[in-house]
Amino acid sequence: MEKIEKLEQLIRDARDDADKFYNKENKAAGTRLRKHMQELKNIAQEVRNEVTEKKNG
Image 1 (tube, rainbow, N blue to C red):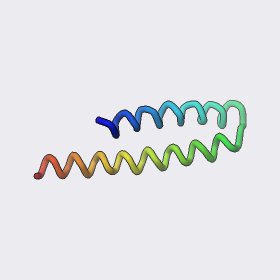
Image 2: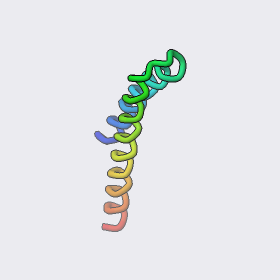
Image 3: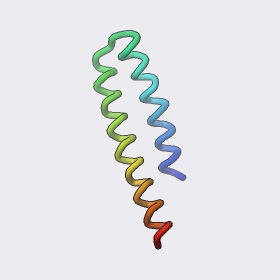
Image 4: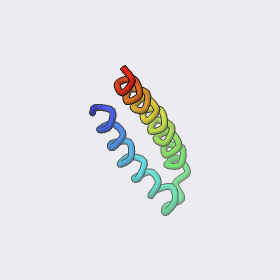
């Protein structure tokens, strides 16, 4: 569940930076948003792998 909580926090952070990027045209927020999205992707893949391993193990 720790990874799910981390995903939730990353989504909150990404939402803040998305608002700054899209609505306030802050380019640095766009860079942070891309970083958050990559982290989300990586953690989501880890969760998928753990679920598959537990299901099949």
